[in-house]
Length: 161
Image 1 (cartoon, rainbow, N blue to C red):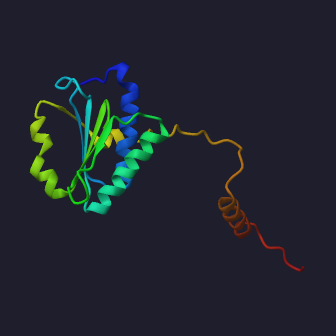
Image 2 (image 1 turned 90 degrees about the vertical axis):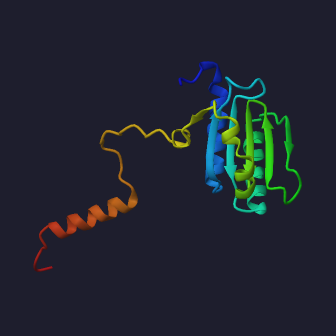
Image 3 (image 1 turned 30 degrees about the vertical axis):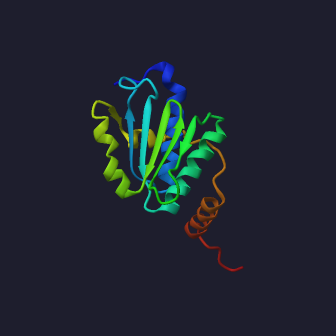
């Protein structure tokens, strides 16, 4: 499904959130495009933390990303320590953080069977840098030193000095 041009800001934020959660070792990251099924949000971002402290760290990271881009938070419900489920409402993106037990219990992926899953690896992909033509630019110090050693080995030694 092609991404709507008007959705680019939301998609950019979604990529940032996915990357941040991935870097904090969130497990089983899933992104569902629910824009055709929901009038409340466009994307559901689902992630699993391995413990309550891990869930807290994931929530803090989500808040950090949202604060950094000044994205409004419509609400947050952690259900209290030990609930195993935290929801962060960033309007067009709803982030659900679960412990494995709560993720299995609520099975949101099954509730949104008509949603379009987005490939997380594609969202995480970093564009490859353009190839740089070899020019006469200076070499990094380590390469310069190695080159100097190579030249010294190859050049004939002078006798008699």
